[in-house]
Length: 493
Image (cartoon, rainbow, N blue to C red; front, side):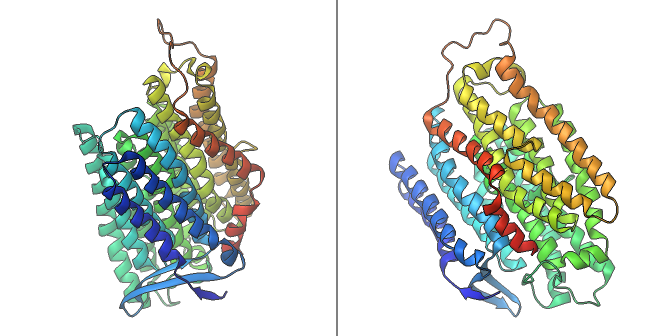
């Protein structure tokens, strides 16, 4: 693997940072303010896309920034693993800019300048995580994401908003500082470096490292990156649903939770490595641990009538598919887990976009109040149905690729495969149980007693068009998964 030094990863980060600054300077002119957001998003995506040929050619791009200690530096790195997250997140930011403009203006939300600036800063942090070359850089940008998204969660500035934001920041900062930070220090003492390994096999630990200490450090990292939504450190995620829907979409699809699972899987594969995890049985331990999250979060989702709350617990469940795939340690399963970073992003942002469109058009939040609503909002609910199929894992939508790879990877295991197969089957049935009734009720149900949807129609085009684009892309990457799979296979190959 040839290493190429290039300023491109830094430029991608600076695009988001510059966008945030220009948004704040243009706060009194809404059209110009949102234009800067769009320019920043498009610039970031273009820069990231320009690195695709180099990465697909088998090369790695780095950009050293500064060194703190021997083996501890702030360095950017772009490899195949980075591109899975970076491409999806940067493209979805473009859609989110259009959607957010329609949503925030449609509801006459306050503090739109702060909202757009923090949104851009969140993408700055997320891309920093994606392009981190070592554990220190990863941790640094992980904390940037936490700080920059706090004002978004507290956006409404009411008691509920402040309470949700307080829970959000307490969960994420205490777990990171209380678990990841000490783990990082001990890893440096043990290994003399925090740089990620060049491949997923060997990790960075010396052969004589204490297995007990390594196991403890591994547990600290799994629980410390609490943005991954693994139970019992998932409580911040449903609480953050008090934020505006574009923020929920950012949290669940574009940045925050993807930062969590990206950090978790990056550390699993490039700090500990497949061989060490297999030797210490860390993989199967993790698989059982996150299987509980997959099933329990799905059961809780069944009980939620509030649409965003149901989608929040769906996210808790779906994130653990990513960690489960990596934890199974077989090539196909790892590929299934990693491809779900992109597959889940497109489907989940569609679902949250739909929830926001429903609220803007009808002011409905609860599923029980949406009977017949699909007949007056057919595009929104058709997109919801497509994204639901992806979450369930039905062909030909993107989520089918995830489930197929996970099933194949499970069959490659030497033991425990029957238990994991049952988990995948049970979770799929639960997915059907909490998604299918929403679409059925919307198209075939009756409106609540005495209610007529007079004057209710589709949300503004600025919202509906991004919804349809995201839904269509979910189908396209389900039918033609080869492009994203190239990066995934480069990780495992």
